Length: 174
Image 1 (cartoon, rainbow, N blue to C red):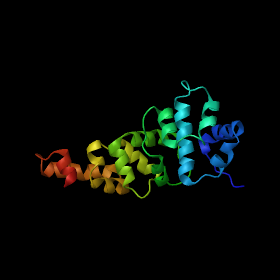
Image 2 (cartoon, one colour):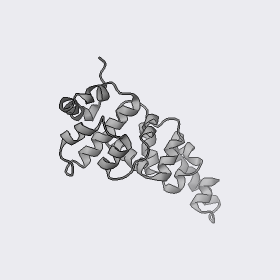
Image 3 (spheres, rainbow, N blue to C red):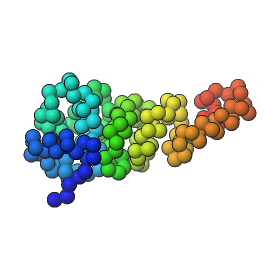
Image 4 (cartoon, one colour):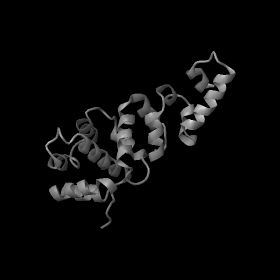
């Protein structure tokens, strides 16, 4: 049997499987979206573990509950449809990246930008989470995702120097 690696979340995933056998196949033979879902659940549970009853609580629910509803319960905010996690690439990301992913999913503008992407890598999650809201909804976001926000800032600064009366949004649109 192949077994998925969860990196930083591996001890918790192991415990989830020990506590409820239905989690074994769910966690250890996941598709990519499920692997990121499990990691997002574990990260949210770890961050809010003072409010939930313990890992037993998560073990009873992770494979059985509606994904969107469980994420809402764990993170305390609606993260939108869980099928967006199918866009997440690679293996399990660093724990902090799931904090950023949750903030992207919790914000409708950022979530919509993520939904327009064919795939989402760990580094792109940082950009989506940290980019100014005015930038996220614009076509220039594609450039920011491929080249980085620093390139956009460099170009915008140059445009501002040439045309001071423009607003930031006008500069980004240009």
